[in-house]
Image (cartoon, rainbow, N blue to C red):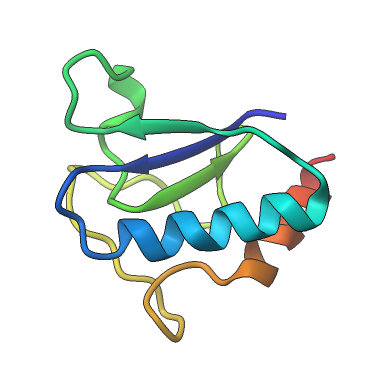
Length: 96
């Protein structure tokens, strides 16, 4: 399973989203994910249009939304503005 956390430095929602991802991974017994700075010129071109933060599981956004057209801050329609732990767990379980 390929799990990618996409964000950029200074994004105020990156840390809360990363914390929820780590909690979900722990509950699912998964120990690793790829942390990608989408503003780094070395990051893959196909990942640069996602907002920050974005969590991809096998290339699919955990919220089910498509990729945007540019790098931007991303606020989810959830309490706290980031994917909640259960949403991430559901996506992980569907991808196994």
